[in-house]
Length: 408
Ligand SMILES: C[S@@+](CC[C@H](N)C(=O)[O-])C[C@H]1O[C@@H](n2cnc3c(N)ncnc32)[C@H](O)[C@@H]1O
Image (cartoon, rainbow, N blue to C red):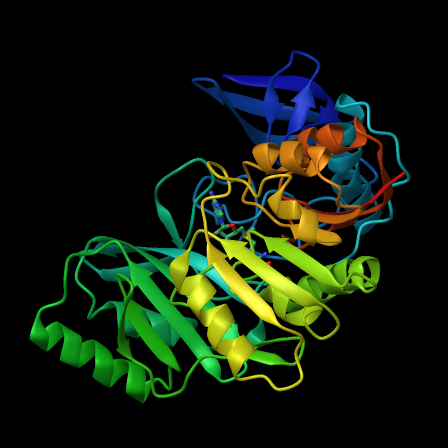
């Protein structure tokens, strides 16, 4: 049954919030809309009175119809509204922990900049479908072009469809990373390849000029090492390993971190991955990189050893949730950068709070856990000297942030 309701606010996931408390995707505050209820879900059927901030979505595959792509949450708002909403997610998270600081404008990322995408592959009777899930569903929308992704990734989407035909498994996950030397493709989720499948996948990867193809963490073929540049160092990340999704966002974050820590003699990079910050910082300072993923650390270490002119770089494989660097271990560092997964770095921040470290850069993809971690540090006298939201995940509800702290 159709209902007409008024939208009064927008939530942190990008859905409009009705006066009734219902969440209605694809709507904006001030709008009057018609909806249909499907269980607890409200589906937009018509915009009766549109907000002045509403605009035509740039992607033809974005919208309320259940058979469209669910990869983006908000493309129906103009840039001004969208950017205020993204920044406000961070403002609200910090306010909820009583952290008062000036928050910079959103660092903007443009369409066509995302170099790393994670796609779902489903094999149906009609062949593989490759793309993002439809909104609120496990059905995959067949992606032909993604406005968020780089041209280099878009040009190869057809090739990836051909490639996955040779990989066994009905449901797979495909990570595509555009590097300086070509595409790095990591597929996971299927059973082990039999020899004919392996040969066919290798032949297809060569035909399609893929730099590296890996399946379930095993490299099948690597005609060229995939390479990213961090500072002066050239790094080959492990198959499917973490790297920042947008190069321009990575550069903006690195510049903020470098600016804050440039005078430090010895820096700890906690949750270092394969060295995004560590290798850039090592141009000026000795760096100790700590991370739980051995393959990422090996990549970082290899890059550091092959790059002339860096200050000493050491690395340590360690679970920082269970065993954060202690206040005693932190005595030898005058600067720290941490960039944890979404869960944040609570235990590590307790040790940092008790330590003598004076300058910290906190990078985070989750404003809620960032705010909790900053609360631990500000409670012992750290001041947040700047905090910058970064729109690394365009048109999604995710917002990245870099906070810079100094002990007063
Ligand atoms: C958001 S990524 C940041 C990586 C890196 N700083 C970068 O910019 O590329 C978080 C990193 O934390 C690592 N990690 C996750 N859980 C961890 C843990 N318990 N202890 C140490 N590292 C962990 C992941 O492997 C990943 O490399």
